[in-house]
Length: 290
Image (cartoon, rainbow, N blue to C red):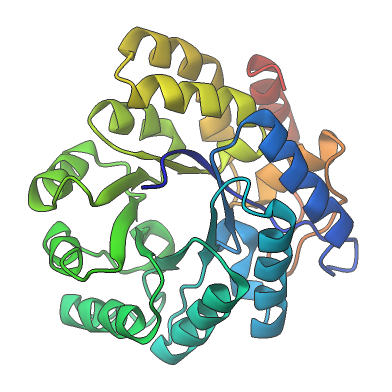
């Protein structure tokens, strides 16, 4: 089971919006040095919605090649068309990714039956470990705990990224699934508590900015060291919030640019961070000592 601090990696771009391979490889090396436990490439924080399939697959391949087995690589392969999700998942499998992360189909608002059949079809088509991703605030569809439990019975559906931030729901999912079904947080603000409740890690935006701090906090929380985990999480609290002051990954890309890791590049319809938001992000970075 993949555990700990898993960075929802941004996709570095130049001013024209082209993928910046040099910065991407630099980010990977930095995360490995800082103790990040796994890299999620081409998740929604990686702007997967604005990269075409060829670009999407190319980024996954580059990440897998650069990581070279040092830590796990999870490839974001979700789509709102089942056929596209299958193609992307096949691409990740061929590239050598360790697992795939599949966001619920967005905009078309499938029923719970549709969600079940969608993920079942992808799992049966491609023999790679698959992690469900529920983020109704971004997709307009909510995968209910009962549907997650039903899907957990499929052999290669191995976990869920639950990004609602509702800890009661997390507890219910844990009750409805087996102990070997991984439960990952997708909301940085509640991730520490989720892991102390028995969760297995977090797929994190904050880890882009504070990888060492997040890795240490996750290690303590998973070990059940409550006081230590809260102590490590406290300086990150403002960062957990400010990185969503505008639509993610707008703030996190601005922060990484300020830190010198990436260029000022993002794709429309996303735009660069507004000047009036900069002070809040900077203050949170200062509080986290990054």
